[in-house]
Image 1 (cartoon, rainbow, N blue to C red):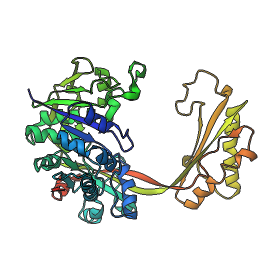
Image 2 (cartoon, one colour):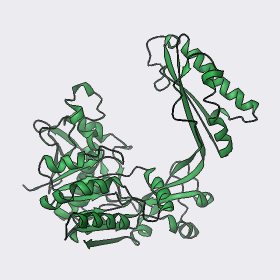
Image 3 (tube, rainbow, N blue to C red):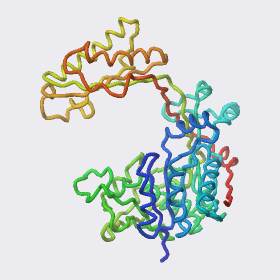
Image 4 (cartoon, rainbow, N blue to C red):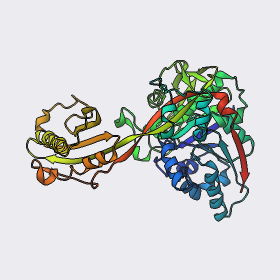
Length: 456
């Protein structure tokens, strides 16, 4: 039975830059997925694009292209990635520049566009689309002038269309993480738009792959059981036309592929296990069956799906004030007591200067004394020999936040004894970018979708 081998070499922008190349070199694969976008990433890209209209994509992908294009062409491996961010066309031009510099020709690169809704927001709101926050129910209209990005999650169909057009690399913006795997499967096996069970199976394959090594031993609860985690192999799904698949990794790599490692990834960002919603299908995770299939091999089968919803999710971000954080190390006898005193000193000196942050807008953390996991320490926190004091504030006034930043360093000589480790310079105010999830009728997005394939 023919299988399609899909690997994932990036779980986020900042993941190990060598892993995509290792996947190409380590054994046979047909497709390489590369996921760069978290919810906040597009707002960062928008800042870059405002400074430089030719920016706004994941620059790490260009480094990969310089190293991997000759091998990609030689092996015929296809790449599907959301590295295009807010500017997939500009990213494609840079990829073509790299290809020409390497003496390559005939490389076809597809671009998927239509997810970026920022310029359309005023018209959409005026037309009655409230884009209510999925958590609070508040409408987006009062924040329109503060929105920095707004992107709809696209599904697998445009990815499959680009592959059908001959693209060896598909550059997308905000597609779902699962579409990086489901798109190639729809293309390879011709799964129909209403073949819900197979679409759900491909979605589950994409979900297992999407976070890279998180399904092959990375971030695994029983980490002590994972061999050679430093050399962890990234995941590969070997998928059959009926939707069943096996999760594995290249031989000779570290890490671990077991029912437990795969199951832990399955529950990541799952929500309601019976209703995992994507643009393509609603998958029922309670139907998934996992079984050992050999060393570092787990078989996945039985996935059931239901029809897609009439909406697409929109991931928007907006400016929501300013923040700053600073920290010092406090050591010696009564370290916890001294750290608490140091925090009190900062707040009182700010009040003397006419600045008071309410408790809801300030944060005090004593790292090493149970701040991250309260109650986890077995020893008396008062006897901890050293502690990191971290202070943070948030406010709508940038000047007030900057003033807070000037009170951390003085603790070294004008606070309790043992205050050291002040590093990183004086804390400065940073913009707070808040997240706004919403729903939009899918026809409003899909009517604007475009897919183009060009050749270098």
